Length: 452
Image (cartoon, rainbow, N blue to C red; front, side):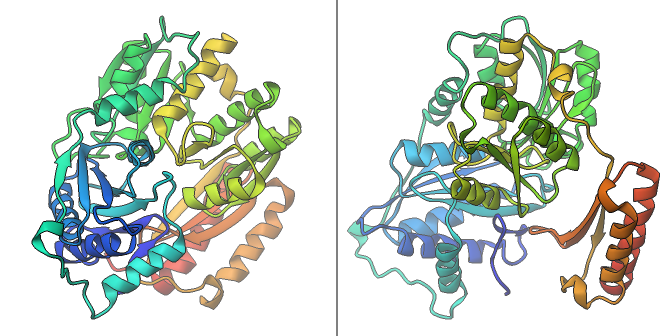
């Protein structure tokens, strides 16, 4: 087995390494052994999304943790940011989420949060990994009275809902706003509708009937076209689509135009600056964020720093620079005043609050950012080798960059969670950049493309 942890925890196809019951059991034991903080009965919170395989991994983790003396608090289906919140709220030692986020139901993953609600650092993950992959499996030698117990937290959803509503200005209401809410048949399917309804919105909910296999399938933030169709049908003012574990959101305005994370960062940054809340006068985005975001912020005198793809890298840059706002084009936005990780519901609430405060429609707010055409071509690969070692790739990238000059950019990277090479190009002419992206992708596919 190769390295377990990727850019966002452990992830893979359910029942194939590393996502097997045996390995997840070892993960639970190793985490319990290393993260107990010296407590005889250390406390773990475990949540999951709605994937079928979540049941077996929930039980495997619980068995591993309790065998090492840890106590487990189970929430059942629960958004990832909600577990980050609860871990800190109930003073647990560790929070664990069983989810593969926006991936298909066949995949699953494990990610860890520390007692402060922040994701574990690379060093601690490496220690867990080393213990799991070593031949010296963690063996419980505890007397029977030291074995841990597991129980369910009955008011977990209520606690989280209250905390979410507190991020929305108390003097405001969503009364009169019509919304279409797409829950991706995932972890937000109960909590998100409750929050918006309690704040006064009139909502139509779609993709909120999970069956274990339909998470992210033709719905949610990965397929926002279904949200826009619903918006037109219900004549809504705004559409909101979450991903499977609720840490990201994609929206659409009253005209059906998509509003992604870049647009949300732009409008939020300007609003926060105008109200003296944009500490450091800067925002963190990623290398994949549209050049239009950079130009929009520059016009407003706001700095933009680009981090590697992945919310942990965005957060690291935010902390380093002292910034309070950052995120990804995918809709993974972090408002550090309210949360320690991306939270789709909180992000939606901040946009809704801005609409109510300004009296403007979402199309007006999002219109401050002019988006440059952006093409992303994914190439499924058999292995991930440096692009510099693939004949012709660097030469092709440089050739395209020279042609675009200051009117666009090229960025090629590997996915941190899937066997994909991503070729991203931005420019003024969509047909032209599509051709450029396809040419670069073809060179990569010829060299290391996976056989389907």
